[in-house]
Length: 524
Image (tube, rainbow, N blue to C red):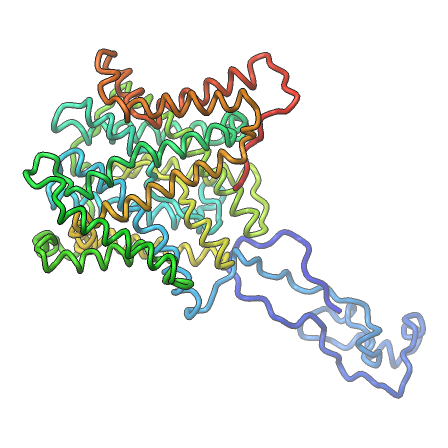
């Protein structure tokens, strides 16, 4: 019987392996007993049969024709295609790709929606910002899944897109920058963060011990907690200066959207359950139309197709405090990407070594560096898509590549991005409570693996969370600090991350020998 391949799986495209595992018998003779191999070698007739040419292998390796198949020695079989490199048929490829698009779409458009509103962009500017985010996410995902030789791409079913971790620091940069210089200052800091990622990426494996679940759990929790005021403001109408801000009609629409999402999550099955968030956005928008709360003017004015313009929002500006803040966040994003690659390696049963992580982080750096040219933000792994791979067991990287291609197409057609911008703010608020609340839950789940039975770890988490929540609880707390300190500490995410890293060094690395060392970074 043929044996499965034991060597490393090929990285190139391949098709589904055949299901048969035994070599076909070639004219076995039941009445005639099999001769020993030595006898066959001395029998001219048998030697002639053994040396008869075959189509797919050398004649010298072909067994005697009259030996039963059960007694023949096992023949090597061509290497089986690894599921990661499998090319699925169209009937399976498209539905699987749609699942990934549904899982990532809301997260991809969230950063441009929040940042665009914070800097006061009009509807046309919001449409360009959303289109740029979709475009960069598509390009980064394709580069990550397909790869370029040994330079970039981890060649795993890995989604790269704008991360929510950078939202709070970028909002802090916008608040401390003069009007008209907000996006240029953000993009300048993002580009330097991309260069920082490219420089540190090859050595980042040595730094992972400074970012255990104790640190990453704090940061992920703070991402969800510090961003929660955003959907709350959306649920009240979005414009704090409007006379009807917080009106019951807005709150009712947000509540309706939230209830719809909960119902689909409770009673939906399979794919419907996975796209509960998108279905809530769609039905919430439909419910808003009769009450005049959906504005279709943006959809009518948006161009059907357009190429992104370089530096459409102004040339980048490089402010030291903004750069420091985003470089801190970039370390967190690199940790998040590394953990995602380790998780996918386990799920896909393909070993994730240092070179794979380096290529993946290099892709993050390239996308983060090039993205601001067209209006993108810092990119990282999308954990929700890792969950899709785990749930569906569809491990082909070409499925995610097709999903990246769909995002690329959406980015090249601004009219499709305008569809997102017409969703009323209260509808986004109802969905945003679920989205950002889920991020906080992910952080809490990570902290549950961080050894919180140790008193030092409890103190570390308590102080880091407190430092991160200060800007949320008291927005004017750092009002008398220097401008650079306001930019770094005014973001709960960067402040909490900085405190968590420093306390982790203090408790677990600086001259302290622990009987129970802090857990290392886990793929979960």
